[in-house]
Length: 193
Image (tube, rainbow, N blue to C red):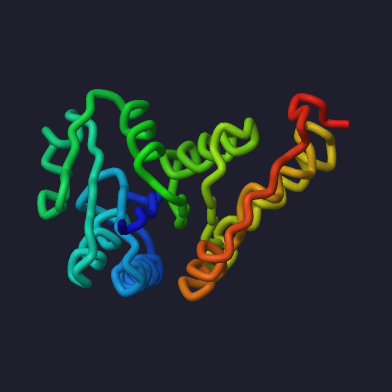
């Protein structure tokens, strides 16, 4: 059975073309490696670019979109499966349960919120699936420094670092997924000492 990669990324069409190029390369690589896409169901921004690229390569695309976005004609209607939900929370839950792994490309508030929620589930050890952050041209450097500070100041245990991996290029993503080795955290996740 084909695996599904949940991709979190920007819906904005205003971002630099370099981000669209990487999103297109990702979709192509996913299709070549027979990874299906599960994502937020949009046709705009990096979301739409990844979906079109996976689809063009013969890959399977599953979109999960809230009704209010669908009503605004923001849905990628060429998806193999387009699931309508009422809330953003339902959207995230459905993507989480259907995905075999997670990847965050550069994005805004929505992308950050999705990434942080999935990292929280990994931290709580209710999720043991691969989580990859694509740090394209250092986009996530500041966030990763914040993660280091959170650990340094003991708001979280250092074992959180084993819950995600960093890729810098599309080529680095798939070896990380293929070689994923789940690392259990501190058995008492609430104890940061």
